[in-house]
Image: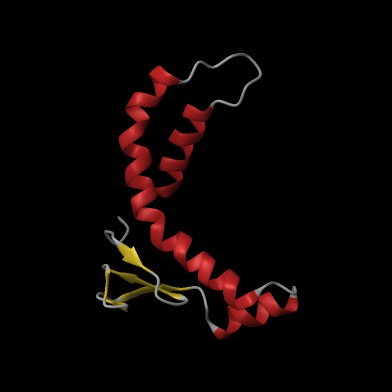
Length: 102
């Protein structure tokens, strides 16, 4: 099964399909990172709850755009990166990230 097509938006701890218009989400809720249980667990581990939940929501909402951008540049990346022994293979990491997302 494929993911919900982007763009996604994160006006709060919810992630919605569709862009923001006048500060409001235009599509249905597709995920939530700010449920009561999430906040309870974050408080238990003394995390910066509200700011961190909002940051997580923004990162998740950016996922379709990040995936599309990585897929677009990957064909050109093999020509850019010269991989020497012992160095991190960024091209392989990019391919692995795409595979993980799909």
